[in-house]
Length: 189
Ligand code: AMP
Image (cartoon, rainbow, N blue to C red; front, side):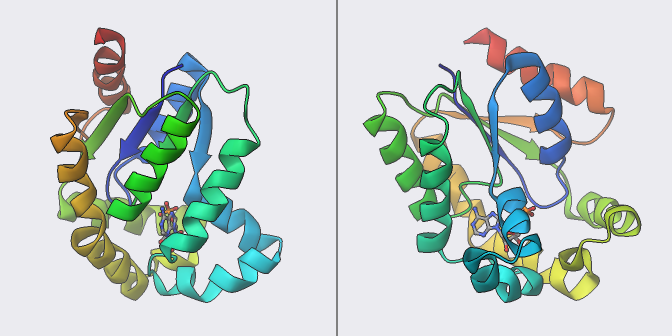
C-alpha cells in the first residue's frame, strides 16, 4: 500500500495530476474540496455547516474536516493506496492523518509539493473561473484562499520535511512532463 499527499496552493494542478495518478496507480482519491462541494450541492447537514465558510474562501475548521476525512477512510478499507488532494491543509490535519494511517498499520509514504508562482496561480484560476464557475474562484474569495494557504497551509511543508517525506516538483509547464516527474519520484522508492 502506497499513500500519497499531493500538496500545493489553489490552482497548482492538484486535480489535474490526481486524475492521471489515479489512472496509473489505482489510488483511491480523497479530495476534501470535492467532498465539501458534494455536501453543499446536495444540501446535507454538513453542507449547510460549511457552505458559507467555503464561499468566503476560508478553511473549514479542522474538527469538521478531520471527521469527514476519517469517515471517507473508513469507507475504503480495501484501498490499495490513497491519494490525498487538498488535505492536509493545517499541521493538526497532518498529525491527524498520520495517526489514522498508523492506526491502520500504514503511513504517508510520499508528499509531493507542486511548486507554482503566485502570478501563475492567479492566471490559471482566472481561466478556470470562465470554465467551472466556482463561487470561490471569484477575485476577493480567491485572495482569501491564497492568504489561507500562505498563513496556515504552508506550515505543513516543514512538518513533512522534518519527517523526511517531502519532495517538490516544478508545477509550471507541460502537464504530461509534470506527471512524468511525479511518477519518477513515486517509482524511485
Ligand atoms: P479545494 O477545492 O481543495 O480548493 O477546496 C475548496 C474549499 O473547501 C477550500 O477553500 C476550503 O473552504 C474547503 N477545504 C477543502 N479542503 C480543506 C481542508 N483540508 N481543510 C479546510 N478546508 C478545506
